[in-house]
Length: 436
Image (tube, rainbow, N blue to C red; front, side, top):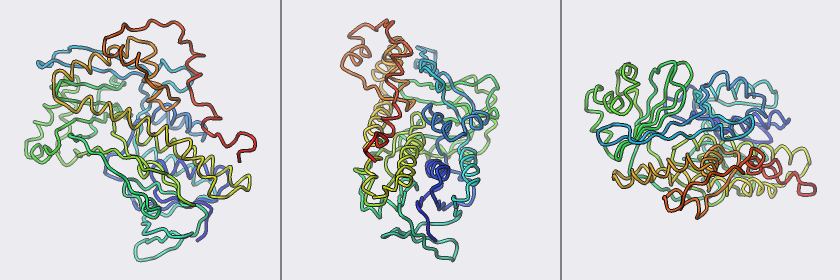
């Protein structure tokens, strides 16, 4: 087989890239190892930048229809007696413009939407149940059942996750950071009026609840590293109580979960590959960077990678400037942005990693002041959204720590905020005349 672009991995990132290329007339082939829905937990929280990208692909309305919109993250800090000690709200509506909400969508349904949209184009090929064994030179060697295949391509993209065959072919090594905690994650029914995200914590416990469509909610519960097997030996009622202690509103709903087998263990890690590009090979998503899963950043970063790389590859094909040297533009745009998100997520993880009352107090104070200070609030939501990047400075840190008072700035107008958004020229800098 021959194709212009070969993508190893048919997850959300790989399919977003494939759809973008197919829409621009580039021949693209995707190889995906799985033949059915994956039972493993995958990202489901779509941030505003992802929705902007899907809007550009003509999918905004369909995804919005099949998702639950989240406008507010309700942050509750409980005392040791489980009484509410503090409550803060992080509000997506501080983001001006159309893309001012997050959306919870079933991962497999999102993949289905992307694959179905790409399948409308004759230049898109999908090889399900196909494993990429190795990539060398200008060929990918695949296996489908007992059949061996070879695909020749101009460019090879690794979107196959942490154990990336493409990254191995590029001889890129990663250094992985682990954490002192794991997560239990499971979906169960919810009340119809439970629509916004909720994060509930004490000095030594953490529960995240993110409502999905169809009156379901995705939950993540933090446990110390190594406690999973011991927990599994307890009756399922013990698990129910862990949840209802922190969130009484889900009493009667979480109990509908009756089997420990439905509950998955999620082990967070962090790494950032030293480079994304080598010759005619590129890695995106979890193949390039793994991030602690505090706000669905992993999937959203993969979508953003796919958008920038798809635009670049399509422009290279259209202009006739097909040299792999031009792939450096992808890394130039995405590397610093990814590093910023990884570090923000890492700091958030550390804030919930240590079971000490002092840490709980500092965390509560930081979130409270983040809500009260309009600039801090906007910075937080902007950085999480993916729409732009505005780093915190020393004054911000002093305000968070209570050393300086919160600002009551009236200067942060919608126009001022939008100046912090990534522009089209910043997303696709090679489009500037003469660069590509």
